[in-house]
Length: 102
Image 1 (cartoon, rainbow, N blue to C red):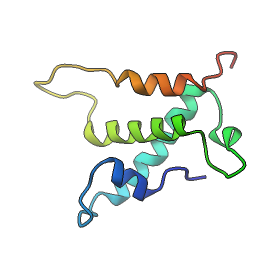
Image 2 (tube, rainbow, N blue to C red; image 1 turned 60 degrees about the vertical axis):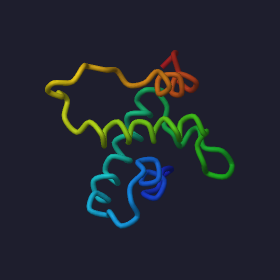
Image 3 (cartoon, rainbow, N blue to C red; image 1 turned 90 degrees about the vertical axis):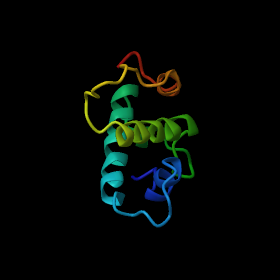
Image 4 (cartoon, rainbow, N blue to C red; image 1 turned 135 degrees about the vertical axis):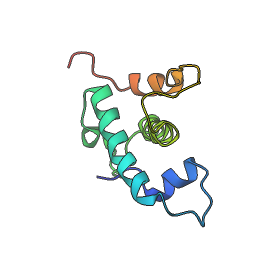
């Protein structure tokens, strides 16, 4: 199930309404980010859906953070920049739901 819509991601990325050239790419990033979060928490997101079909807000925002990271950093190496880790906020959000037994 798609928990993050293209509209959610575009708003998170602060994209101008007229700029739609990257929409296909962003849609792919949403799916990749969802898979990354599922791997990080050792659960399928569908197992954590509420009665309304939504996932917990921390996981929703973790996916958005990952989409933003992938969108801004399209290559694994950035020349001339100081290496930096993903913000602690992402790790904190996914750790709330990580299954350490799995």
